[in-house]
Image 1 (cartoon, protein in one colour):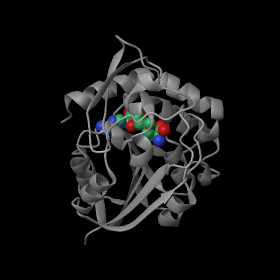
Image 2 (cartoon, rainbow, N blue to C red; image 1 turned 60 degrees about the horizontal axis):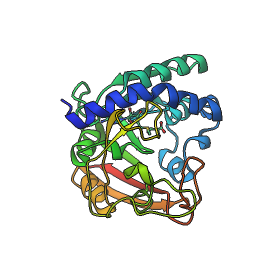
Image 3 (cartoon, rainbow, N blue to C red; image 1 turned 90 degrees about the vertical axis):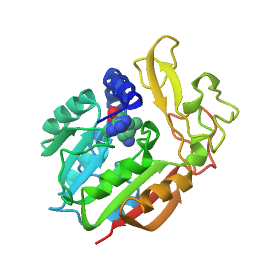
Length: 263
Ligand SMILES: C[S@@+](CC[C@H](N)C(=O)[O-])C[C@H]1O[C@@H](n2cnc3c(N)ncnc32)[C@H](O)[C@@H]1O
């Protein structure tokens, strides 16, 4: 079961997949992540994964799959889950090129009914997935459902404080030298825009996309009511990302939540 917002976002990612792949090819890091996981995962995240060799790990909203390749290189048995077939097709080719064995499954993160309960040791999600999802509670409840008792839910997201200043939510107000508040911190959306097949540019009359803005409290509430106990919360990175078009240095870039599945 999906919804009109996710269906539009799926079409947008299917169309945008080629440009996302080109972008990843430019940096080329996807070719190295399986040998050097720190290209895809921050030390703060790697600490929580620990030794994942032989463990079942699901990555939700896997996108460019750099995290998937990193975890696979660390010896985990990884399932890569994304709503976009096109994204998965690109990732499948890349995994084959790297000689990695990964399971690829097309699913909406709010409905992963094709998976049984309690099959994964770790579920990882993030890196700009939550803002595509209309229902944070169902998203993390599904993540918790497929986790084994005591398994870890690792959520690393773009920080809501930076998100509200980023032109994601108001793509017509891009400026390289001053900040424009994109949204009121408490207004969750949906934020509808029409965009080019390339992933970031706005294009009136183009493809529809719907983005949501979640607060720190929304994340904490959704994880705490998912069947997981929130055991750790951390914020890191304050530098400007290469793809950011406004001067966001000094604002926290990432927020990490660790939940442990109740037994
Ligand atoms: C910006 S990428 C994030 C992943 C990765 N960090 C990256 O940079 O490629 C967003 C990904 O989330 C996926 N996605 C969006 N909505 C989704 C949903 N409801 N269920 C599963 N995947 C979803 C998109 O197809 C896309 O591949």
